[in-house]
Length: 216
Image (tube, rainbow, N blue to C red):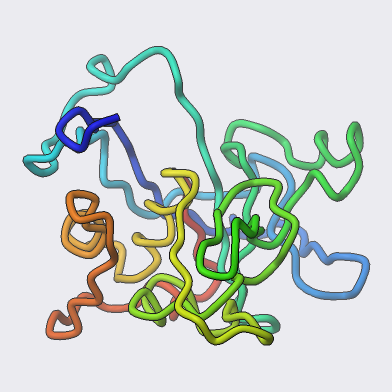
């Protein structure tokens, strides 16, 4: 697809565990986000927007495409691992516990995964083989991905491609909720296919918020 043809509709919500939601833990004792859809509350939303090569413009839900829709839910564990947990579905419309009970816990909340194309290219996807990049994240660290995702074996700069929903979610985590749209537009430079740290902008940091998750 040519750059000028790229366009998509998206909506980003910030959510948190609902008051009284029972705490969840993985088998190793580390924190796990809630697994029931009614155990979340929405805090902030960008509303529906259309991204084109000319920028971002608000649209209504009725204007969104009916086909080729997909969602992602991402939580940042800033207490124990400083890594992201994600699920490739909307955690407010699907009981993740049902998925775990039916298909096994490995299909529930899991860490971000990467597929290694080569030493200079990783793919961020839902079912990658590795939990770190094949090299050094370079300019898209630390705002987009924390340094903990850097390869421990290869210091070569590593390019990154992958699911658009995950890219949007990570861009949203790079700032405070009220600045999500401006960060997605200015930091996730899809025209040039690169990440712009924009260090001179004080847009906050979504990873500093406790019990904060992103739903795309």
